[in-house]
Length: 159
Image (cartoon, rainbow, N blue to C red; front, side, top):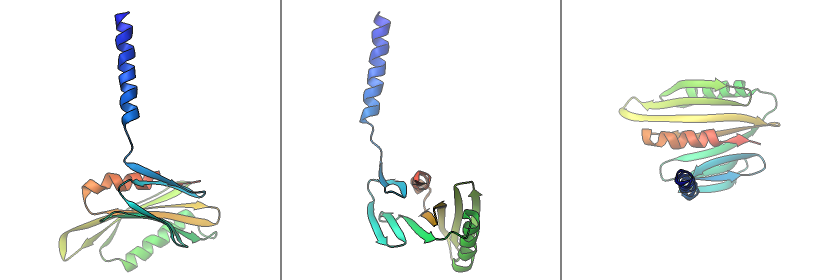
């Protein structure tokens, strides 16, 4: 009998502990997508017609952008973005391109030849909803920001 009470008290304490845990992330959702971003960040909705969501802190930004396009696959669009990055960005280096049936994930870095300490890593997740392509982009310079960026990117889901 005493053992059952101890078991019940343990379960009750665990449930109480879980109910007190709050997420460090805020969820934004509209009729097209959902995304999570740190609660301490500010957000702007519909800043521009092609940018329905932007969240930012003093040092980081996460943005969702859109492009009307029914004539290009997600994979082809990702490859076009990579080609544009190679031409436009100094120190661009592709780390990976992963494509599945719903999304493409581009991971790349930028380095500055003049500053060996500078290293910016960017993640871009691309998906399609109807005739519109959606991309969420977020970057980090410090490894302590990596988990936040990956959480934001992974939380992005099209409806």
